[in-house]
Length: 84
Image (tube, rainbow, N blue to C red; front, side, top):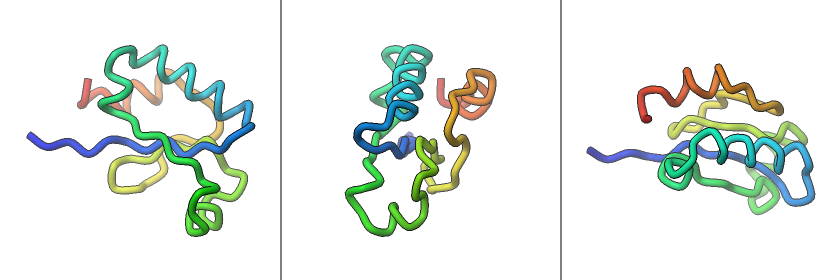
């Protein structure tokens, strides 16, 4: 079975992004690297236009935003339950 990871869009020097990522890493533990790929929105103009300052944003493998700005453990559990 092939699995495409979720994408966490962040940017450098973003305290909110760093906090979100740390909480997500803590929640997922060893599953983090298999389930989540981190992308810096500032590395592609398309991402900058799409997300602007709306980071962090967790997107499903097909690119649909699932959660923005603040870590929500219940929402993350609901989104990722099928993959855990």
